[in-house]
Length: 388
View 1: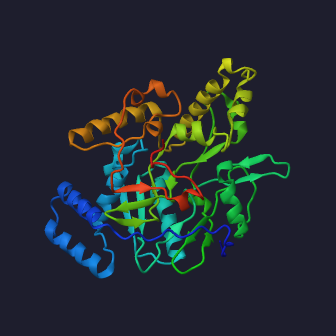
View 2: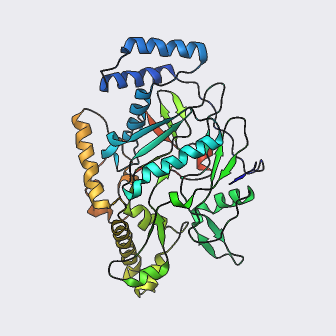
View 3: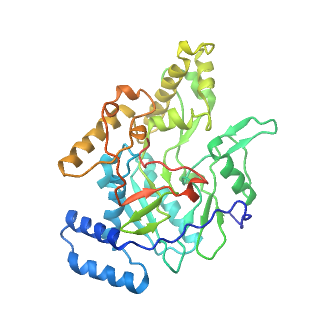
């Protein structure tokens, strides 16, 4: 573990505190009492309490029940997430009392342990203290709690995840001793109120990884590919009733295409399609051979097979597409709008073969919700908890 302050050129600005909007607070409390009517404090009384707190302190505090409900509904409202059928199963862990970077790091490691669950992945969100007029909220600079480093050799050849190359440079300047391999787990940068950002290693025993092999082609194993079991987003702001929680890492489980059609394949990531095509002996001299498509399918077969063989929970895009339409039917039967971004809901492999392709969706910014802010986007990327 290391601790240092980066230069001003690399240190991002802290997220600004947003004055809670009374109307947003009222709408959330109304929604909470409508969907969870059996509450010890009546709706009108709770509204009065919140208004008094807002007038006296400029903010208010959610009860645990409100926090739990709000986080689950934020997932329900996430328009880019195909896996929302499971929104009610999201486990919400209240970490709002954690103050120091060491406390927060400990809770983040506990999140990894609880969520990984020896491969039986649990949907989980850990909610840390919100921003207030008096105190900046803690946050983690990393886009995900587990990500692999990216490097360039002296002659410019890529090593590792090129999508994390800029962030890798940041943590190296902060003092991280980079191993220089293809699958080096990045350290976490934790920033708290009034203190310098601190660097923490992620213990290897908390990172469950899956070696990637193919059910029919033993040559895949020689590539030495692997991927971590848990997609835990850590840079998206959770917004509930006008209160912002910049640090609320959450996860579901992977959909295979996120690994096999994006992480391993995107030119700005591992860019493995030419490697896979060569391994399969495909003719890459012409696009009409569809070598990219053939290599892509076999890589995705390998990812799904490997996770299943390792006993790690994962879903395929055909099954998840059908489940999303089940979610849509259930929500519409409750009279609720289901916002969806077509470009994210349709899988990146065989989109036209999935039922989610052949329809339009409502586009709406419903709250509570998760948001990727500009300062967070500058250091990483965000996505839904159950892939895209």
